View 1 (cartoon, rainbow, N blue to C red):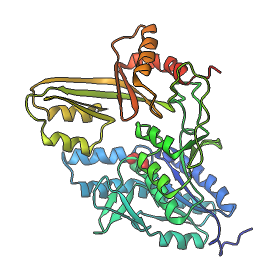
View 2 (view 1 turned 90 degrees about the vertical axis):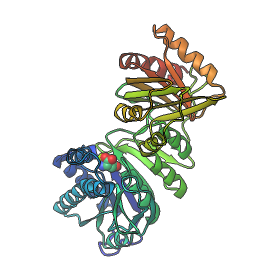
View 3 (view 1 turned 60 degrees about the horizontal axis):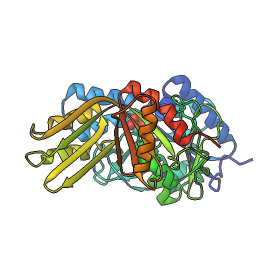
View 4 (view 1 turned 30 degrees about the vertical axis):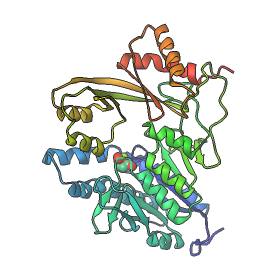
Length: 409
Ligand code: ASP
Ligand code: MG
């Protein structure tokens, strides 16, 4: 049994809970009970929390009700509050269970970022106060998603940025691993709510997880995966509600050998996105405005591509409808413009196939069997994207999963 006074040599575990796992007082209490069990085992626990439920969206909405263009510094002051609420409540819940706990903001942990408000990058994690509190046997609860710049301004790390906080702390503290606990059981070959026989990946390499995250799977933040790879931090993704095996992401691991699927090419995951828009410009009469590039950079879309063919330009983007509409408004009305809202997207993430042509043929013939033709299909950045009206997307997901990922062995 470890004494409460000397825990300095104990293994450290960094665990991050997402907003839906902390969306109510009951859930916060449930999380506290699970943590109390690990603490009693003598593990040094650092718990990174997100804002409760949809708090960050609500705060952002509030800002935009007050001002059309809120200053990004002030947005950071506001948005960082969400995580402070959760960290203090969780510490109180732990104390009620007799577990010594202390909460820290990103700034108090010495999480130093660059000065780019609302999308800051982590430069350094000092972590002295975290280490001291761990040495005193405390559970350390950290507000995710935020840090402080060298100019002592509060910054946030971009939406979903608490994962990055967790990985950065795990690296700085030399933690055994970093656990990202959510309302899902791990990384699957498709959303198990939409494809009931989707398979969980028990293990993935960093490279494989980066491909899945980069294709737009929101389960783990893509920047957090790159950081984990850089620092060699093993990442575990699993359920916050029950003890389930989850997905372990590390350098050694790799996805299980493919079962014999009909198609030669086997993606790692088919990711569903709803309510997207497509914007394409063909052969514009004038150069595209610089404000367009700046707007794309500010809210990176799901995919962007361009092709120059002599003096003919083709440029396209897919992304959330509201953001793509804003881009549409920046375009001069010259040249041919395609703008379509209310589309769903199925993204096939994985190592690229030997040829996209063969994959395209398989997809189109499989869709034709379902009576769907004229589908919009784009392969860019090693990801195949199918754009479909929502009813078609719901109908084709299972058959396409059967074709490319089904167990036909
Ligand atoms: N609460 C922030 C967000 O919703 C950060 C996070 O959840 O990781 O984006
Ligand atoms: Mg959140």
